[in-house]
Image 1: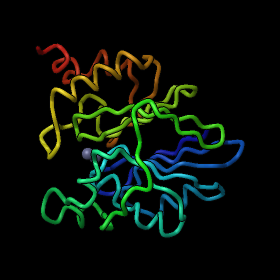
Image 2 (image 1 turned 45 degrees about the vertical axis):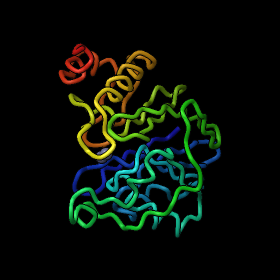
Image 3 (image 1 turned 135 degrees about the vertical axis):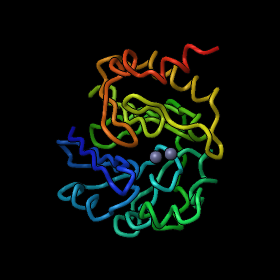
Image 4 (image 1 turned 90 degrees about the horizontal axis):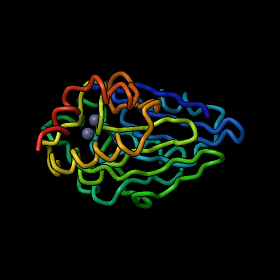
Length: 213
Ligand SMILES: [Zn+2]
Ligand SMILES: [Zn+2]
């Protein structure tokens, strides 16, 4: 597997391009901005799918352009469709470089679903809390978790935006840190990556919200 993590847009949103070395088939996760950089990362591969961890426009802002050029399906969780064209704040779409309207998904992700592209196996974990339809993608055989805005290095996703829910976020975080091995690399939705083990020890907000009853 080749994993390219591209920080795009002013919020350094991490778009992931996952490539199967053998077949050269590829998957794009969270094409939020900077379509040209994403197309460049996809060169010499056969793109098969566009996935979104959730419906915030900084994560789906270039789905339209990718679909127009690549003509491949776009999948996300049904519970986040209401967010696809919601700029949240006035002018936020322009600020993050989102090209709206975002196309409707061609299909929906479900918890425990396995997405297979070439030899790649991406397990879908439905992890609501930041948004109702938030999903993480777990590539178990490579020990990689694409965590979207659930978990950050030293922080966790915010739960105060439309559809956010602290109790759900706690359950999702609890699930991820108990199901996923500590040596797993985490690609966060924004900023630097981390590992599950590191966050278990050093993430104050994770510890605090999981301890609080
Ligand atoms: Zn978000
Ligand atoms: Zn985000």
